[in-house]
Length: 358
Image (cartoon, rainbow, N blue to C red):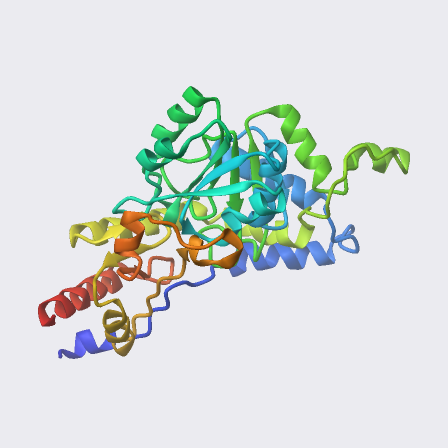
């Protein structure tokens, strides 16, 4: 092994949080020191973060909340999903995608995935019934494949479409559904430590979302009048100013982050490895062996998300041919700001080395 290659033998984590000291951390410090820093709840920073995020990505109705999971909860409520309804979601996702259906006493219908691990549009079409109320499209790893087809399908069938865009920031096509749910959790492309956004197509539903995130109050009206009537049962789902300040600081670096991630995607693609904006992945029938091999060489990998029908709360496993076949084969690979193009070369070289030894 050459000395040059040896120097590159550092540990590469599967995920890594990003925070800009100059922008993000200084923004938080300035907030605490400022004239209004004694008030750290939902204030001017949250409002500014909503505005800047909306302008950056071209959205009109953006509501900041305290997690991507909460954004999903609100989306299900605003969509009017209830006990008699069915919601179709991909089987391979985080449980947060389907938990709101259980909270609403709706029925979760799992759709199979395609070979790229994203939702199978064909299987969604086959599973639509008279009880289907909504479809949840999950950008698995930021993959947008299938979203255009689902937009047309849901329009044709008059179904609500919810985007679980937790991993989609930086993708070339996202934020097109009736409701789009963004996560700003610690390891996401854009992070505020935690937090999220709910993006609504409808202005009235957007205004309702803003009320529901803060107990049901019209916040502006309450601040002016001191108290107002509650006619909707809301929640404590709002974002706070410290979270927003951190997010605003990181938003200033988002072009650099996305550009770097796309360079990594291009390098993975050059080596025939599948990737989207949030992670790359490979398929192998020897997943545990490959995982151990990569770890031995300082590269951390994992399966991270799992088929949701294995969880008791969702009622047990269904027969889903592609998921059944790939369940023990997919392995996620590092793709983040802490990974260099040279690191991707190293990762792909290790994959090739493992394949030749099989």
